[in-house]
Structures are given as C-alpha cells and as structure tokens.
Image (cartoon, rainbow, N blue to C red; front, side, top):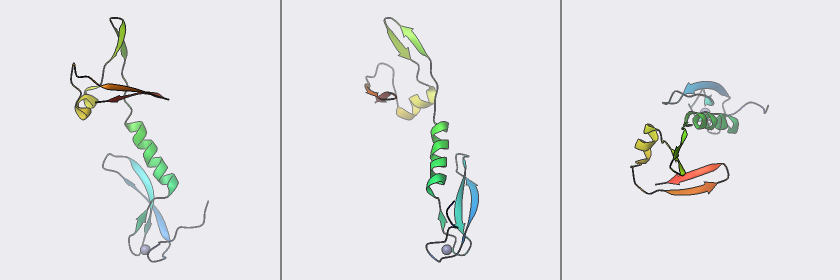
Length: 102
Ligand SMILES: [Zn+2]
C-alpha cells in the first residue's frame, strides 16, 4: 500500500469512506475532513466500473428461426435502444461477440 492520501487542496489527511451510487452500488472513496474534497483512486474507480459492468449484463436465448438463428432481445434493451420489429440493424463482429447498431 502507498502512504496515506493527502488532500490536494488543503493538505489535510484524507479519510476512507464508503457510499452508494443512485443505482445502489456501494463504493469507497477518500474524503478530506477539512474542506470536503472527495477523490477516488484507480482501484476504487475500477471496482465501481466492474460492478456497473456486472449489473448491465443481460441474458438471452438463441432460438432457431428457419435456417437462421434468432435472438430475443430483452424488453428493457428494446426500450433503451428503441429496437423495432422488422427494422434493419447493423451487426459488427467483434473479438468477444457481436455489436448491434441501430
Ligand atoms: Zn482538503
């Protein structure tokens, strides 16, 4: 571990506190007890990003549709990306999967 964090504004020792995002994800950060300056270090930032990534994972089943395969897109994603039946989309093959552009 590195030595203790000092506030970049006033030089006061910062304390580690934890909080929750509006989405209910808990995270840790440093807060200056004097001026109230708040910072996240890289690992704390990484932790929050990881939690968000896991939260935004959806599962869908691929089903046979004639000679092709169809993917049922969850309602929530249909709404979010404004997918519509019979609307054409672009599929981009990427290293870890497919990217669908509306
Ligand atoms: Zn401060």
